[in-house]
Image 1 (cartoon, helix red, strand yellow):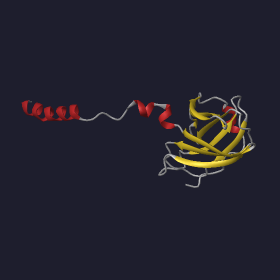
Image 2 (cartoon, rainbow, N blue to C red):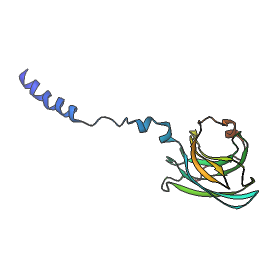
Image 3 (cartoon, helix red, strand yellow):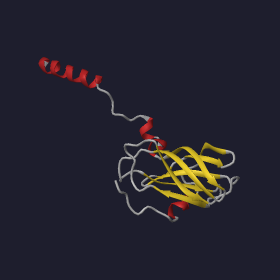
Image 4 (cartoon, one colour):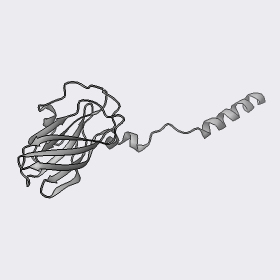
Length: 158
C-alpha cells in the first residue's frame, strides 16, 4: 500500500501544476467573436460617396468570416451594403472600399460589419461626411431586419 501512495503523489503533484484550460473571459466575450468596424474614411461627392471601411474580425475561413459591411440611417434605412466574397484569415484588420453611397454630406449614418454565422457586431462608426466618423456601439439586434435585405452574399470563395 505504501508503494501505491508513492506512485500517486507525483501524479497528484503533476495535476496540481498543470495549466487550466483556457476559459478566459475573452473566449466568452461576444465582442471577441464579432466583426467590428475600426475605421471609416469617405471620399467623393454628395449623393455618390465612396466609403473605405476597416474591419477587424475573427475569420477562420468560410465557416466564420465577415461577409459584409453596411451604411444605414439611425432609424434603420439601408443605404449601401458592401458584400465581402471571402474570408480574411491572414489579413486582419482589412480595409475594403464601396459605393456609391447615396447620402448628403450632413446625413448622419452608421457603419457596421456582419459575420456570416454570428450576425452583427456591436462596435460601429457613426457620423457624417462633413463632420467625420467616431467609434460608437449599438446592440447586436439593432435594425436586425436588415440581415434579410438584399444584396446578400451568395457564397464564400475561400
